[in-house]
Image (tube, rainbow, N blue to C red; front, top):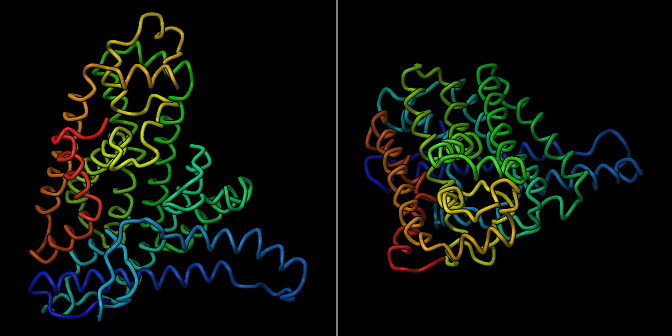
Length: 385
């Protein structure tokens, strides 16, 4: 069983979180090596040199990138103590339903652990593939503070790498139930991305501007639940599929992950108006109408623009930043994000089998979750916009 140590206190739980995260990093390294190992051709052949440039290098960059991602800080004496580590909700599910090391009656089978380890790797690799493909669609040149994959290797190779990683992740998952779950996640994510991208078109923009507020909010929630909520739903659903968790609890977790996804997307939308969080990218999200802030303010869109679909770019930026209700809207949406996160975490705690499991979940989610609270506090102080 992965992880060790007394889990009767907070430090013990965090030691298990770190041990599980280190195990996942080891598995990811092995997975990456399996895709970047030289084939039967001579190492110095033209063919092998081309493979190294066009396949091995972009795969290694896509899977290995960690710059700027939220992680557990290095801890002396812990597993991989000098490296920042990212907990996985796949392993939280494993600990919740199969227990912690050293607890009587909670020793899980080797088959369960093997399935969960494969699922955790598959989830992480699918997220890496999504990043590679999304950055191309969004025209994002920077990801996690470093050049995006398509900037480093070109769009054709980045597209190929993202596609390869999807197939490799599904093959690695192996368990039919897990593969079905992951395929559903991929479909959900691609559907949400399609709706998001559609808001760059004049027709969709005109339809949104003309729609009543309730329909606009419903549009955003459907899109965000698929595009961002899937990022939270995928690891948990893959894990519970591997572990055979009962359907009732799966539905509870589904709803919690949907709310976490909505909270996360609200956070992402709001950071475009708060320099402390958005940095140099602040005030740049005006090429489409998928931002919730925009959708909240459209009732007072300038006359004539709904039909033309011209409320985009500089026109949209001028309209939104000069809107008298902008500050109030930011505060309301930040409070909504805080409540969605609180509700989701409370729901998950309701299915936690132990205090240790609840603590494990808190550590995993609060890597980013605390930023949602901090954003709200920052707006309350009158900063941003």
